[in-house]
Image (tube, rainbow, N blue to C red; front, side, top):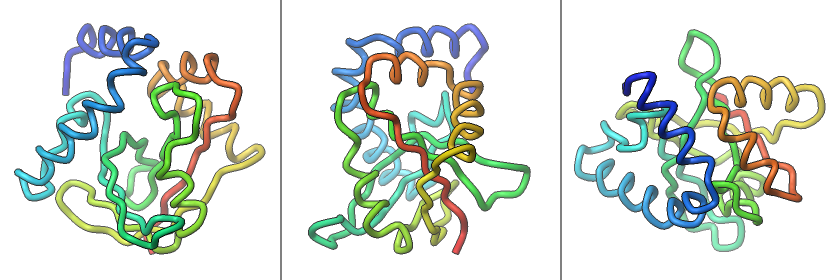
Length: 161
C-alpha cells in the first residue's frame, strides 16, 4: 500500500472534475490489462484502494460484462464487499450498476486471484446510510463526487453465494 502522504495526494487529485473526466477512460483499461497479465492476482488501482473485478451478465444482452472496481471489504472475514457506483462523479449511473440491478444473483468477482460467486443487493434506507458513512470514512473523495451529482450514488453489498 502507498504512504499516507501518497494516499492524501491521490484523494485530492481523484476529487477533481478533471480526474472524473479522464479516469473512466484510463483506469479500467489499465486494470483489465494488468489483471489479465497477472492471471487475476494484481489490480493496478488496488495499490490505493482494495479492488475486485466484477463479472455480471449485461442487463439487456445477457453477455458477461467485466469491470474492475474499487471495493470496501466488510468485516474481518472475506465474504462481503460494498461497491460504490460513483462513476468518478459523472452524471449517469455506471453501467455495471444496471447490470447488478437486473442480474445481481448471477455475479462473480475476482478477489485476490480467486473467482467467487456473489449475490448483489442494492442498499437503501438506513442500511444505505450506514454503508455511505463507512464509505466516506474509507475514501473521502466520494463526498466530492456526490456533491457534483443530482443523482444518489448507488451502493451495493456483495455477499458470497
